[in-house]
Length: 505
Image (cartoon, rainbow, N blue to C red; front, top):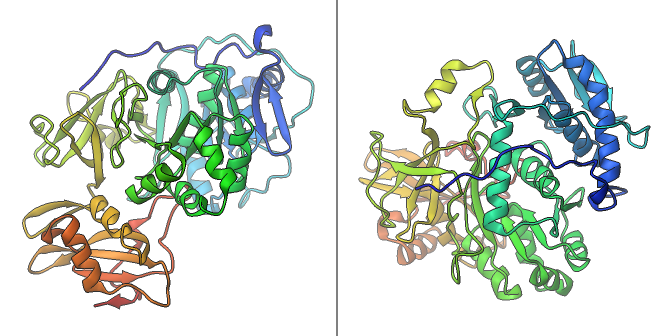
C-alpha cells in the first residue's frame, strides 16, 4: 500500500517574510509571538548556538518544558542547521545523564531558572531569554538527510535509544498530514501535549509553523482551557486518549465544552488507541468524530483517517490508511506478507518510505535489527487490514498479542469491550503464562465505583457475548489507576500478575 510522496524542504517557511510578520505564530500562557517576533527570537538562538557546534557533534539539547522558550529554541537550532535533542523535563538524574552521555550535545538550552536533576557534566547550559535583541535568521543550507532531531524512545526493553530523524522525514510527514487533514495556514491548533516527543513537538509545534498557521498551547490540560480556545476561534484540537476520556466525562456538565468541540474543524487523537466508548460519547454530544492516526518515534506518522474519504471514514477503532509516500504491509511470524485485506488476519506492521528515521544513534546493531534486508522497518505493532484498506491496530507484539488456546488475540478489542460495561472506568488486558492455554487473558480493571466492583464472571460473559468465547478474560484484577506514561499510554510491563492487585473471581 503506497502513494506518491509530497515535497520535502525547506523544513520551516521563511519566518522573516514581511508578509507574515504580523500573523500570530505561538501563544502560551503569559506569552505570545507573531511570526516576526519568532523570527527575531529564533535568530538570536541560532546565533547563540551556531559557533558552539561548528566543529563538534552538531547536536543541541533542549530542556523541553511546555513553554515558548522550547518552541523558540527548537526553531532557532533548526534554523542554524543543527540537530535538536529534546529532553523530557520530568527526567530523573539517571535518565538525563544517560541521554546526555549518549547524545553528546554541544550545549543545553533551557528556560532561565529551570532546575535540572543533578548537574549535567561536560555540557554547557545556555538560557533561552526571550525579549532580548532580535537577530537575523541564517540561510537554510541543510540537506534532506541532515538530522533534525534525536528523539529518545521510552526504553521499555533497556536504556532509551536515540532515533535520528532527518529533516526530510519531518517535512514529508507534515506535508502528508496537511494533505489528508486539509490543514492550512488558516487553522489555529490548540493542544496541551508535552514538547519532548513527536506528537507535541513535531506535529504540534513544527506542524503549524511549517504551514504558516498558529498554535495555542494550554500549558497544562484542562477541559475549561479546551472549551475557551475552541470557542475563541481555534479550529483544530490535538490530544491523547486520556485527554479525550476526560473530555467525554465532562461533556454533560460543561455545555461550553460541547459547543467548542462541535465548532472545531478537526479533532485528532494519537499516541495510543482511543476507546470506542469515548469515540461514541463525543460523537453523540457534539456531532464530531475524533480522527485517529498512527505513528512512532522512529517513523513519525504512518497512517491517518482522511477527511476527504466520505461519510463513515473516521470509523472508530481504525487509524485510517497509509499517508502519501508511506508503504505499509502486514507480515506473519515468518516475515511473509499477509494476503489481501480481510479484516481478520493479524500481522506485524512494517513500513517503508522517506518518513523513516535513519539510525539509532551509536547503535548499528540495533539499527540493523530494526530493518529487513529490503528496507522495511519492523514496528512491532500488530494489526488487521479492514476490507476497505483501513488499518486496525490490535496492540504491540510484545505486550498486546496474546496466544491463547491456539488463537491469536489482540488485547485492544477486549479492552474496548470491557469499557462498554457500566461498572468499568478503565481497562487494560495482558497475557499471563498458562499451562493449559499457553497464555490466559488477564483483565486489569479500574471500577467506576470502587465500593461496588464488577463481578469477574459477569465481565467474562460480557466480553464473550460481544466478541467470542475464547476472548473472555480468565482472570480479573482490580486497580485504583492504570500505570501510564507522560503521553497517556498504559505501561503494561508494570502490570504483573504476581503483584498485590486484588484478584476477583
